[in-house]
Image (tube, rainbow, N blue to C red; front, side, top):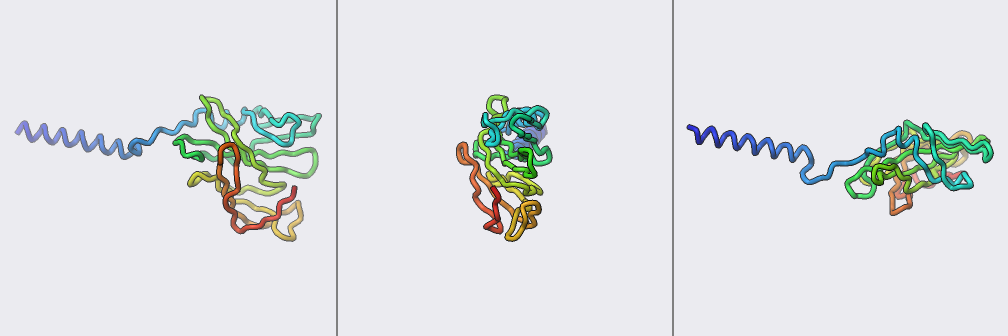
Length: 188
């Protein structure tokens, strides 16, 4: 009788351990996003083609330089997390909006990695002027953007064409890998 009870206890412990391993994903490393929380991203430094220095340091999600007539803001609602490099650690993808004193609002997609607890902007790509990013997620090692972009005949002020674009991170470059439908109009 004692042998049966001992066997049942051992089986229960083994089954519990197996369930815990399966729930954790086996040997998968835990994802680390400590440096990529929104408050850290709002106070990080980003690459920027719109400033003489080529970089902007955000404070509370914003950078302003009246002398250069440049304002850059992190669009808080457009931050996504996921593994873009295949290393098992999450990166953050986010959208920065830049205004240079005129009517244009230039959107950039930026990728940020956690480097020893510090958010580091590893790459940026221009998305366009006065487009609207409706949603963003990281899926299958790509940043997937659902957007309203300029189609044929659309004035600069008013894009009307729905598009989905997928971007991949290749080293320190973000590249457009797929767009549907293809051939949107890009105003520079």
